[in-house]
Image (cartoon, rainbow, N blue to C red; front, side):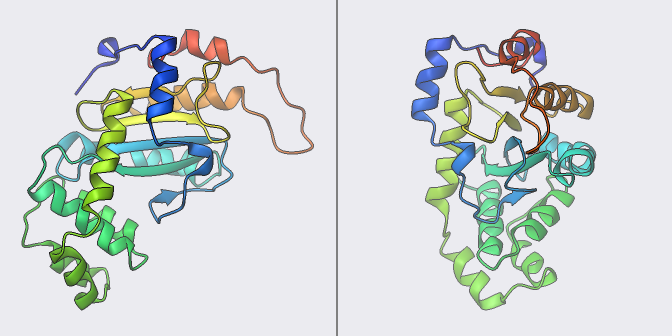
Length: 235
């Protein structure tokens, strides 16, 4: 797991190029069933992850529930899951396909949660059993899974992660929902399953300078202060 002291920084010109290359625009993300939280949340947190990754399971078990209670369920953060299988084939890819196939039946998150509850101990023969447990149409799931549907989309997610500079899992991008990252309000890259308090510090810092609800005064925008104070900032 990468520590904050090893975070790679990117020059401003590089960030602009990265923004052009990366198909992430948090303000216009299509809800494909892999979003938790309010579409109007001021902050977006994207996770790039592998269902077989031990640190990813650690984040799911220990940190995500606290983020969900404090920020996601309260409308402050919307959470997006993106696939980053570490190998080109094998159980990690199969798990990502299984989750996508469950999503085709509107049950992405139940499958996501079931897969991570195994804490990385997955095998190829288990996925159809999980589909049955969460109430999927077995025939439709089996067809989707056996045909390895969604592979192209899964690997596009991985390409997206590498364009952000991630080379392992999990990796997280924190940004304002409206407009996505800009040179003045850059994205924050958080590599690794850092503790909840480190996520909270970055989210609270960003929320402190976010516009308030309509009818409330808007605080002065201090995006440069955020960039200077964050150990994770892409700058």
